[in-house]
Image (cartoon, rainbow, N blue to C red):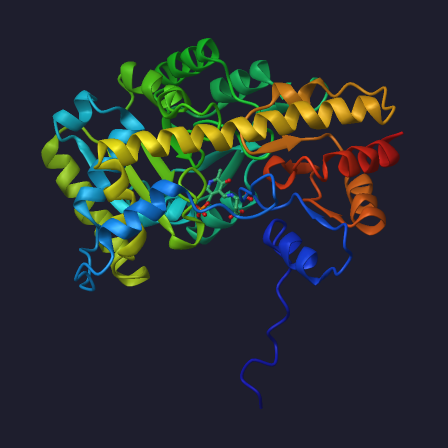
Length: 399
Ligand SMILES: Cc1[nH+]cc(COP(=O)(O)O)c(/C=N/[C@@H](CC(=O)O)C(=O)O)c1O
């Protein structure tokens, strides 16, 4: 009989499934505020000018060879400097094992498999809510998951007390997943003072922090400011790990460019850790793709291109902040009397609107507006031409 007769259709991905539904809709006013992918005020994807210039720099260069299993060393060095700081002592002392990854997803997965292999008894503590794919990644790595409180649906802000209590109650030396900035889906980040308290408690409990930094530069427009949580933990002496993505902040979504780095005791340990991370990559995809890493290295390695990138990433962050203000203003003008303060209090790519699944379903069925059922709105999908339409629709389903 047929080999695969028992294979059932997979459930729709809660995020990428929204894009599929959006593409299938032919309505002229349809809006996609689902997937976290930047769009210009004209509603178009953006290729950064610094990327275009980098592509011209590398055009025709005779690169088609395999990269090492750990990817481009030059790329890894630039990526780690971006995360930890140009002058970070852990980099000067060569204590960090860095490996090029298949964007942020790949970096998280490499860490999850590394954790399974070298800390087989460990579990992972994941914030509630988080990026939906985090659960899939640690599930497939066979690492047991727990959650810790993060978001307060009443205040639509950080549940700091709940977070600290859960961190305190977790067993000694637990592994935690933390969003470095622009928390997905809530857009709620701890303040620097709160990060300092979290770091101190992690020290007390001997916890380990993996930072998922998929939006560095995208939150505030300042790459150093968006990495402050990592810098605070480093200054406190934590040996963190960091999963980086260049999908959003450099617009390299489909190039799959990322980096996983692990801070170690010393150079010898970093060499050992990197060698083991490479052994995880080898059977998975052998070695990572060239092109995107070369673009990133070209940009971060050229002062003018790097300065241009900083300007452009700030431009994207600023447009999103403007859309937050516009959406809130249009909701008031539409006649809504609800409190929409969180729309401008939240930061990064997403607004956690507070809409419930039924209201989301109505936005989609009645107004052809596509967003994830947890009420997350990707602010980049909003522009000056559709913000009023969105505000009226939200008012309609929340009145
Ligand atoms: C927190 C976080 N971490 C990692 C990733 C992985 O991105 P990558 O393209 O592998 O570098 C994403 C992507 N989030 C958006 C896209 C997606 O779901 O894949 C999103 O939440 O819409 C994140 O939001």
